[in-house]
Length: 474
Image 1 (tube, rainbow, N blue to C red):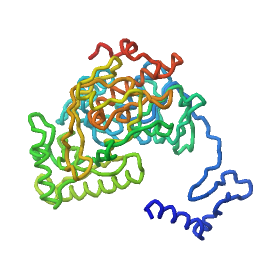
Image 2: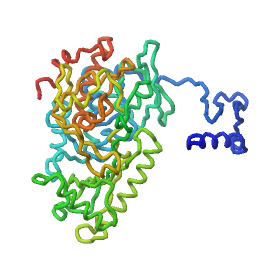
Image 3: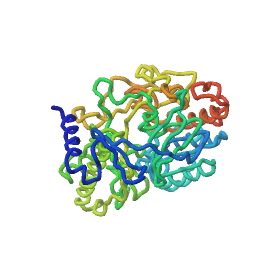
Image 4: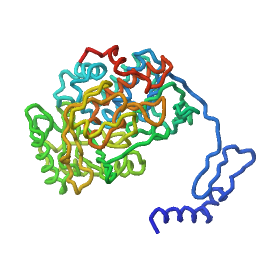
């Protein structure tokens, strides 16, 4: 008997014994108390929800789900193009991995005109005097900046709101999403939707096909629990600090890994721990890998979070025990959500392949050019605990508009790491500089589709890109 069969049998025994009765349920029949229309049905180990009316709380031309780098850019581009735009975010701030994930390391951003360039210029102006790693910024500064940008653009923003279901109409167009929040269960209707959830949650809920991990094994890249540290000073721990000008990539990481093992008695789960300076006395530490756990499974995310936090605290306790420049080191913040590298890759109208990245593919409908290399963090500890040697090397390649358009459901686009690509292509385009550029393109296309009464796959991106506000600004 399999583990799944055992669990099913246990659930059935639960409902056949007094355990279910103490909750007021009768197996196979609804619980009825007077005219209680909320009564439901438990049957064969499942709860069958009673039908209910879900109010349509808002309507928009463009509905963006997920307020990370891709989602903010999508909402800004759509609103600036004149579309009534609604942005929904599950956490209490915008910025995604930059803010709620605490990894404000903006990679592959130098050749991205438009919104990415605006964000960088504003952050650099605000952080002008900070001694920091290039491309590294203060998560709190990013939160405020993105909120201000959305407010100025007229984006209708709603935080603390989870997208729970997606509903198609009779002609296979995504018509509305259902949200869960402190306000209860509500619906949001739209003309065009953009899934920027990272996990491709909305596309999955709408019935889109998707891929995950290596095609031969299903193994995916690990999650990482990142923390912010204080109580140390850049000048005193300089040999262990990553990404400063003149450093080698591996030198500070290997030195830090050795120090962690010496002080804590164990090697970090990520063999190349990275200590990034945000200010002279504020650092971001990435030293954790959580293997074999899926970013779209709440139980796996919970396990990864608990394991990650425990490991990081043991690590910092060990460093503190060394005394000297480490005597006051403390974790001052841990993430609202653990960082997820890899999740669902939603089927689009074009799938970026390993062959595409190896040949440096160019497309007529390019939304941006990815210049980041193949970057696969070991999918299992058997492959090491660092960066794997990949069988393909990437040349700079285009991300085509078609990879942002859902294949199986009309009126739906994706931006960020959930677009359509294979395992190795994803490992290159998943970084946030590309996410912003993808979101920017998706937002403009969605606004244009809503205004013209067409669907995203009917947009001629090559033609539209010529008139984009950032065209000619490379």
